[in-house]
Length: 113
View 1 (cartoon, one colour):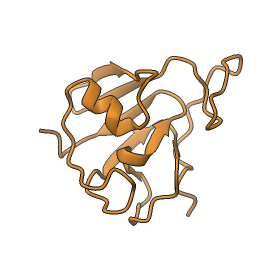
View 2 (cartoon, one colour):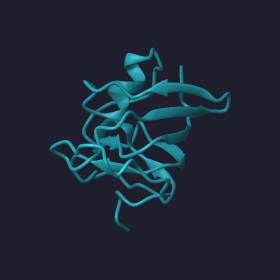
View 3 (cartoon, rainbow, N blue to C red):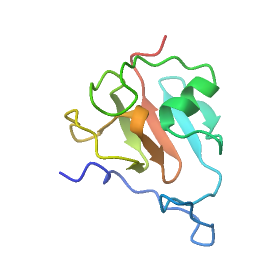
């Protein structure tokens, strides 16, 4: 399975792309349950950093895709991994510690503190 291929919602084709090939257009993270909507900060190097920036605490250990502690379900959107994770990632799951969103995404986060 290609770990960076998930549900597609599209992006603004006119937006610039960063070094990772991901559009620099403004992106949002919607947290389920509850529907809390967060803007993805430009300075965040990973989805985990973006969640932490907004005060959302997610379990993690390695910050590099090795342990899988940060695993959560993505119900909409698409992410790109900065590096291929070593931890097993099932369909519909992502590792926020080593990915960035390509477009608006929706997460079902059960391990939020």
